[in-house]
Image 1 (tube, rainbow over the protein chains, first blue to last red):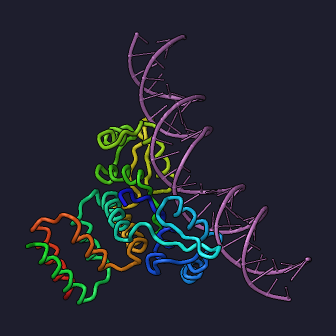
Image 2 (image 1 turned 180 degrees about the horizontal axis):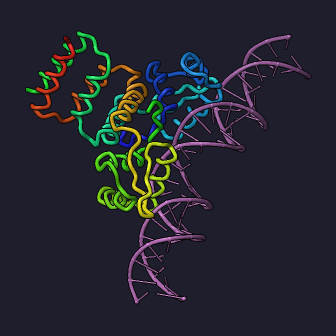
Image 3 (image 1 turned 90 degrees about the vertical axis):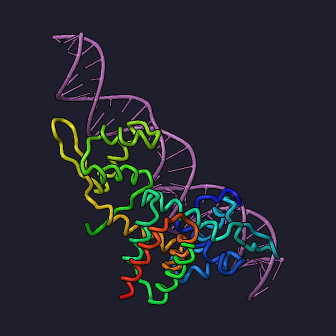
Length: 124
Length: 124
DNA sequence: ATTTCCTGACTACAGGTGTAGTCTAAAATT
DNA sequence: AATTTTAGACTACACCTGTAGTCAGGAAAT
């Protein structure tokens, strides 16, 4: 996909379900989201419809019921969000951003080791 | 400030100026933004008014002209944005997020050294 | 003193977003 | 066959956002 559409906060929630399960009917999505949200079924359907319109997801009709599936990958979306977040909040400066996160958020000793390894690879 | 208001993309741009200069008249902000944007002066004034309404900035009248200044710090705002970004895009999982950034974005050898040092501190 | 200009206040307006209700046709149930 | 349930289509609506125009009142210029 060349042109990743803008995904809103609530839409991310829906997409997350589809990325996880690969393919779902509306009611499966509704059920999955019932755990994390208080959304009425119609709300979820609206979000699905909007995602279809944005071409972020597609669907196939099976037996009078739609099965939805993502048309964009999570990794694509993340990349786009990363960039825009980095730009908006840190003016594009990666290091200050990383510093802030490493400082403020929780990391296990293992995480830390792994990140250091990753940084080592990067420096080659 | 306990309750950081939601700052939109365009508003961040304005806030960035105020954080940098500490205090500015509207026309100074307009001028500063003329470099990075194509916004008409009225647009910037609207954004200033909205930020005032959200209590993100304040102003003092001096000689019939307002001098604006931030009421929230950049670091507070960043913290809030960090959290919501991490939640929305990575479901709250910090390490995958860091991994992605370290992999995809540019870092100098120096940056890498510094980050490793920071991680070392963290692991104590 | 009159005109012009600047500043802030108010108004505008389309498109996105969160959140959901209603309508219709088909399917399932009684 | 009649009724109820369901799924998708369409409609709703307030608030946010990007982007800006107009108006009124004092300040500056003529």
